[in-house]
Image 1 (cartoon, rainbow, N blue to C red):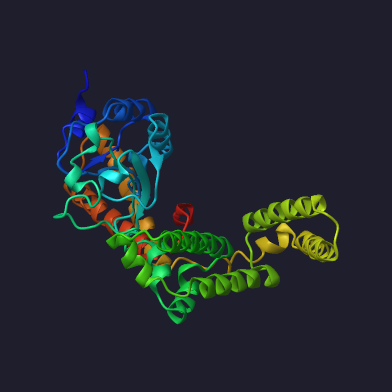
Image 2: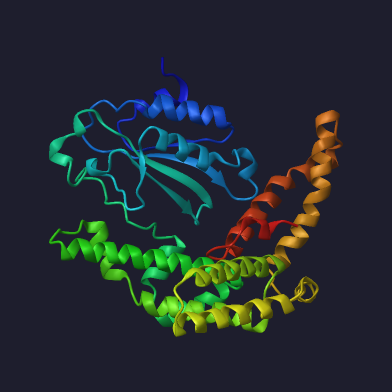
Length: 355
């Protein structure tokens, strides 16, 4: 018999959100199986079931580190498919997508459940006419901001939002994904199929993706040419270079392949000269500090004795002064989290916020 969270999910008649904080791998798999192994009862309109699977640094310990992977793997076992363009329509029943809400710093998985009988036919094409169409890209996501801003604005933002080589590489991957999305929309148009409102809106707003990709590639190349890399970034480049050389060695011999191989081998020699010691000597200036590091560091230092005091409180009594001091802890933690979120670049790794 289905019970607990799975029962609440299956009884949902409207879009709902469920928090997986405190659930381990076994629990997540069980909830997913119980909730989605069979189609939902007939619905008048498609709904989306949103799972919160992760959060920022101060809250991430509440979630299983692999909650998103566990949930999506369990959905795939039930023949659900990932579709980043899925929306609240019966056409998307049996789909899911992952999202990162950078505004709230939450990681979510959105599921559009399978429905008995395929749902209400009158709503199958467009979903509930009273529900606002969900955008293809969350409007606060890096991908949306990159897609719609002008090339001049993008050039100004890239240095502040993607200050490292690794972040510029991720930005390139994001733009390549946007180019693929744009191509899929154009293919739909070329096939004579009308766009839904979300597709049309994004199609109208996308701007100069090819130019943005070229500019990001040029700026990323500067890091390599000037040796502005971390040891980890160099290791990534070495692996990419080795793969490229191996691929070129397998290609049919030609003047063009020979020239590409020559450049790849030259890059290999250059990377070998960038020793770990040389790169480590740059650590005081690269990577650049977090935007609000000057404010975060003293708050972290102020938090340390309060954490010790909190441990003491669990084992005995506190003086009045200690009790008053402990009330500051939650306020300091909230301020640290706010400053960290304000410091996030478009593709910042969370370990950048570790002490």
